Length: 390
Image 1 (cartoon, rainbow, N blue to C red):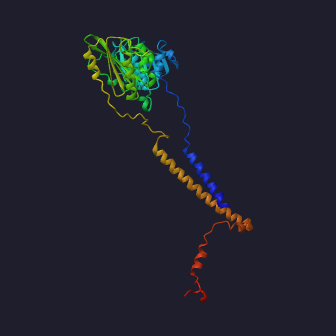
Image 2: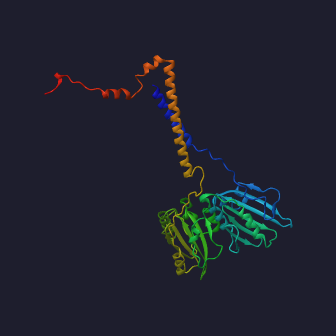
Image 3: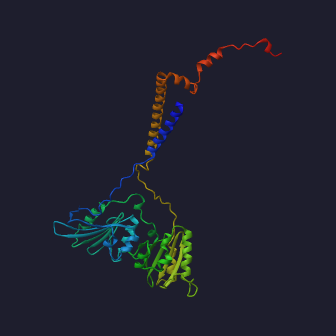
């Protein structure tokens, strides 16, 4: 019976060792770094920064829009310098860089000047708007100096970047054609509230953000004024084709649209097309040829994007997995040796303390008896004459 006990102990030990090797330690929740620093570039925070997880604290008028962009938290503070100047900072953090970029385009105005601060920046008079990673910063100086931009660059360099795919910007704005584009008019939209605030050739019901749509709009000059180019990206070309059919149906002449279908407001020329998963719409005071030329400039290129994490940690590191396998094998071998020695020691102990029981169980113990087999092989086999066959 001892060998059965031995096998049971061995299997149990191997299972426990495997469970211990596969069970990763529960990750510790790392608190997010503060959005605003206490000092940077000679500026010192006056008092403490005001923080909140409520988008209303960042912008009471457009709190819903900030939610659509993935708002997570907000901080604001007043900074001073030894020369008496004052700077007011407001910073909103989003779930990823796409949200910060979208909010940046929402607040940016065409009359702003582009600056080289953070990932993108624009300025107007004493106000500078920029984003870095997933953080949008609105800076308001009481007085500008020749070093103001450099000071904000130092602030931008200190902002913590998101990890993995959260750093990626949306590719859709890159499909906006550059000829005749009015600078600073591109708007990246991911929800109906922002679309209604900005305005578009078609209503949010036809865009259908619930289907995973993303929108970018840009303004373009034409012979009749400024028109709008709207690009709507859907997850698949099939979904895009279905929504293009709905848009064409809604833009049909009066009386042909299906009852209950959202209609398109007439804003002059209206033309649309599909390129892959992108639906392009040109609308406004455009000539027919200008609208077709604008749409012809939109070409979808199918690129493979690696959006998985590119960093290593204890959970995603292959070398760490192989090391754990080696440790598991070593643990199993060690347990096997210990169990073997324990089993042999236990049998010796039973033979000494309980010899009667040891002899009775010897019949159940599997033995090869190699010495007896070798002696039997050396013996000659004798056959009686009566048993021999003719």
